[in-house]
Picture 1: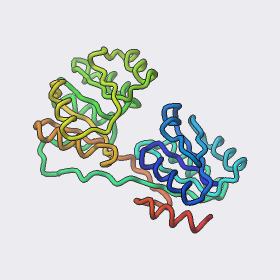
Picture 2 (picture 1 turned 90 degrees about the horizontal axis):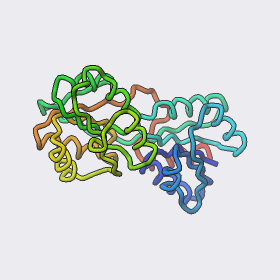
Picture 3 (picture 1 turned 120 degrees about the vertical axis):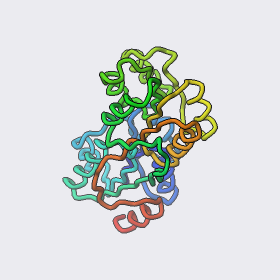
Picture 4 (picture 1 turned 135 degrees about the horizontal axis):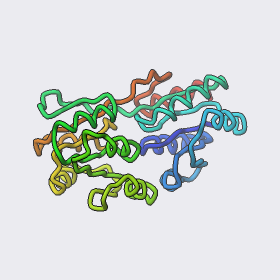
Amino acid sequence: MILVLAGTLDGRELAVRLANAGYQVIVSVISDYGRSLAESPGLSVYAGQLTIADMQEMIDAQGIKAIIDASHPYAVNGSTNAMAACEATGIKYIRYERSAVSVPDEYEGLYLAGDAGEAAKIAAGLGQVIFLTTGSRTLKLFKYEPLLAKCRIIARVLPQPEVISECIELGFSPGDIVAIQGPFSHKFNAAMFKEYAAEVVITKNSGTIGGADTKISAAMELGLPIIVIGRPAIVYKNLCLTHEEVINMVLEVI
């Protein structure tokens, strides 16, 4: 049995490939929405947060031989929990990491931030209308940053009731909530940034499959400052950059 932490499209695709290759696979996702995306013939799906203890219990109960961590590049807790659970139980940890987008150093409007907090502070000096494309987990940080108190902050988030409710609770007006499922094309991003009169765009480097490339190129076309939040500095064991590398590593243990 293999446990796949599949918080991304490419992670779900990897789980399907493993199932099609004859492996027994449990897919772990965070939400019921994630469950609906991950459900596929041959896959068992678990929805909910997994602590280290939860993972250890699942490893013992299900006879799991390896954990494939295909979680989002910014999902730090899931990755550290998985590495710890594998270390404690003696099973194989394999990290699948989607490639980052090459950042165009020659663009004068490009700013790199180590984390969301730094990005918020940088944005304060660049414009009054901030367009966030960083998901919902850091909304509170941006909304409560004193330097952004007089700025209009646009939040582009998933169209899930709990996420929209969180936006409202944080004080976002309905006109500043863009609830829509990405990723989006260059043209769509450019049109949206222009429609909302964005003066600054903030994104994560979630790779091409996460749409980071088209956000960056759209901002560049419009001459907008774009702040790219770097990936967390985690030293992964058994890092793989392709599905084929993962499958070859699985062959070694199962």
